[in-house]
Length: 333
Image (cartoon, rainbow, N blue to C red):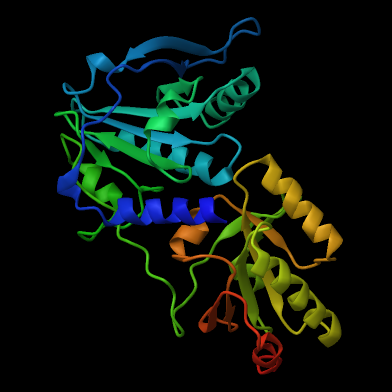
């Protein structure tokens, strides 16, 4: 729980930092391999269909502006952002700016996963293979996909954006800030605001523990919907979730419930699955990579809200709630 909160605080600090305070990028000694999909006809069976080159950041940082999208080939949101990124770069005027994607490639399995996406989606951008997580460790971002940019003078300029459509503090989206730029602009993302009663909850689609996508908008309807953020390591969450499940069991499920958990490592998944099984949790448990929690500006867990049929927030609760049953009972009808 503490690590998750620290990560969220880091994201908020990055988003709130003045753009003029950009620091020198620590990429100068990086040497990474990059692959590019071979354009044109499909490769012969004995060929990979990819060309490879060496990228030395000492030749780039402080000389040419660089934008990097770090993405995850196994996450649909990352792949879709990569597709948008390529289309955006293809539609821009030619300048000295360099546009890369980057992906973790610690073994052949991860590299092949990236190559499949590049081939299936016809991605021709050069993709940096981060085989030792050298780039990942130097990019202070809490989740993927994530944009990172270094201007011509070698200063970090883009931090905290996960999409070209993310709004900036100055107004407009990242896409607009980059559209006609000849250097990486000094822009910061707009800091997310915690939802209040009366706000419309942002839509999201996340996979459940079995990998099936679940969309918030599809669950809104005749019943109120509870959205619950939790962690298997949080003692208050471990007390709260079984109470909510027991309340549902007694009253015939008068609510839709979507619970979101952030899994930072395989051990978190094991702990989550064990908790769900031991306590008979039947409502959906969705895996958040951090973006939804960040967008909702979750200050900690447990954190839950009740939405009406139109997605409007009617109740917000932080932490464990002694009077849980009483509040829920008011929303049965």
